[in-house]
Length: 58
Image: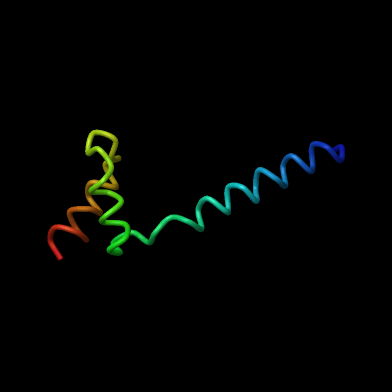
């Protein structure tokens, strides 16, 4: 693997880890607020289930 490919792969990995570290924990108040601000048509099935479980039926 060339140095440029290795650098690009490393940068992509760091970027992906950085994005996942910024997301609030599922079920937290911040997550419930984020989901209520997001159009419900954009929710995944898992997000809808988690929202109902953690934010509606506490």
